[in-house]
Structure formats: structure tokens, C-alpha cells
Length: 121
Image: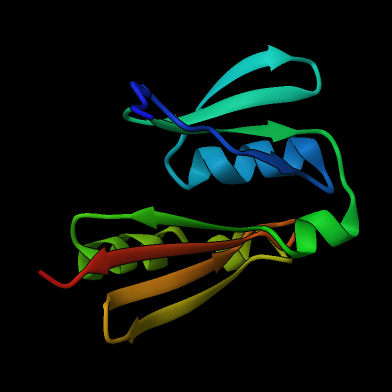
């Protein structure tokens, strides 16, 4: 089967929807309100839907990987945002080097784990 896909957009939940909307805007995503309880967040052609819905088992097991061009540059910009200083629940973890490449981590206000990585070339 051939996919003529144009995008893929996961749905993620939020414990506190308004707080998470502010967090993702601070992280550099552009928000587009879809409904009072759902927004599309985009970075270029990439995006995800944030819902005002919280199921602990679902959110606690959600991980998203986003490939970035330069993980070192991304990490430096991420640190400058001071997201853990602005959002009590947010944690960031420094770059790790693995056999496939390098990545750093961000835990959003609801606990969703983001991997921001760069593949070895």
C-alpha cells in the first residue's frame, strides 16, 4: 500500500488545558484553536492536537519523538526558556548520546515525555 500522507497528528491529553496551551506556545509551537477544548499546535508542517482531556494511564504512557536538525542548538535554546522555572511540573533532561544519535527530554505539565533528537548521519 502506498500512503500519500501529508501529515500525521497525534492527539495528546492535558491535565490543565490552559496551562498546557501556554507551555506549548512558550516551547515555540503555534496554536490554532479548533474548539474550546482542543487546539492544534504546529511547528512548520508538523503538528499535534492538544485536548482538554486527562486519563492518567494514557497521559503517563504518552511519549513523542520529534527530530530536530541540531540537538545541541535545540538544547541551548530550551535551557534559555527556563520552562521548569515557569511551570512547576515541567522537567528537562540533558542530551544523551546513544548508538543511533543524540536526544534530550522534556516532561510537559501533564507528564507527557517529549524526546527531541538528532539521528547520527
